[in-house]
Length: 533
Image (tube, rainbow, N blue to C red; front, side, top):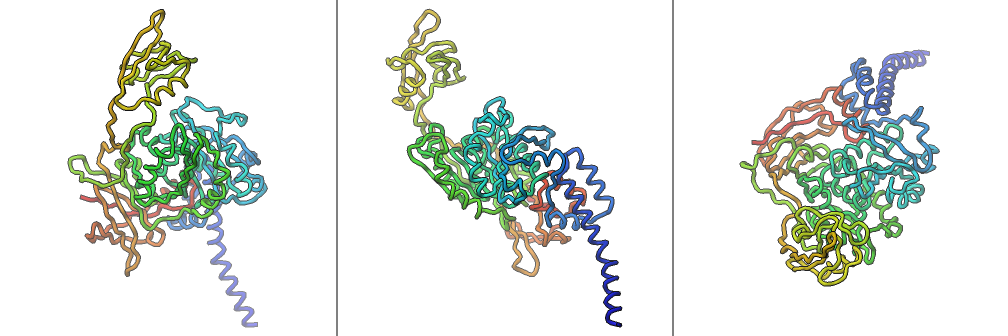
């Protein structure tokens, strides 16, 4: 009887103490679910409601780390249909853009996705893109390549819609891609460690850009017939092949590609591999600019997706020249040395090499009528004008653009040429010369290159953050959960030991960060700022 009474007393005490705490945890978890499912306009209201119960930063961080479920109700639930459907996402700038989603039947019926494929289409230079499901251009090759394998492997496939002002190597494009991923997390439990960027042509070039400039939140990239230099040149930003060592990539290409043949792409891939990048490289002969090899490579791609998981790194090495592209996981390069004080940083670049075919710098409408003459081009220097009709090139008749391309194949750098054009009622004889080729670095280096390499060393009695850097005057390091409660952290900067204060985010800031990404992957709870003289 005594034991029974004691047992009942213990149960009563446990009930009195534990259940309210569990209720509070459940309430917090439910509020986080609502925050994850919310529109941006509702963030502040939900955050204020959470803060009324005065949870600690650690309680919020732990609840996010434990995993926050997605929530689909109302119109969001109606969107969860098998096959393709059209959705919309609003980015951090408040701009709403369309995107499309492919959901396997098994996921709609309650199954769990194994990966998210973010497929970026090609031809992003167009002013607009159709978004109707019947339009092939709306999803590019994604509608051909992914549905069958997605059904079998339980992948969700999402297609952001890009255009000239929102190409993948612009800030708008990156914001759109991140907004699409965040929007999907509202309704679907996306595996945090298995999100992959993929794409064909410009989409593949976008993969390379993001690997060098904005690799969060991806586990890896699948680049089909693209080129790393495209985003580097088009964005005007200083990009570094060495940053590709922080991601894993499939780089597929074709040797007869009219835009990006293997021989032009491989020097960049080899240079990145030399910097430590893990790149599965595939080069197919006798194929043009098309991913006809995808079915043949599907087993290898599926294996790549299965084995490549995103995880918090113990060591990060990153190159940048500005804060906009200076962030990866827990490392942020915030300030950089001036050109007057900067020292040299050795990084891998690739020198330009001669094109396989000379370009006049003109466009045709119809068969031979000149519709465009690029400023400063060889044709402009020779005197070709818009509305001229090309009659001959080097004494050979020109009937269409194909004839001209064939004749240009016989020319090289430094060669002279002649052409006849019809202008009104007159036929003019024009002469010109292709410039002498001068190799130059492909990746621009106009501003000082900042570099930092950081790692956590927990081998001793207390953890130490080891830092090496050049031309970075301030950096921020976000601490792992095991160090988030520290007041101070030991830092070794180029061998010099120091102790720095740990700064802690407020509960509100942690909630805002979670609201913006809806990601449980890496909670940014505490950090140290390191200023380098």
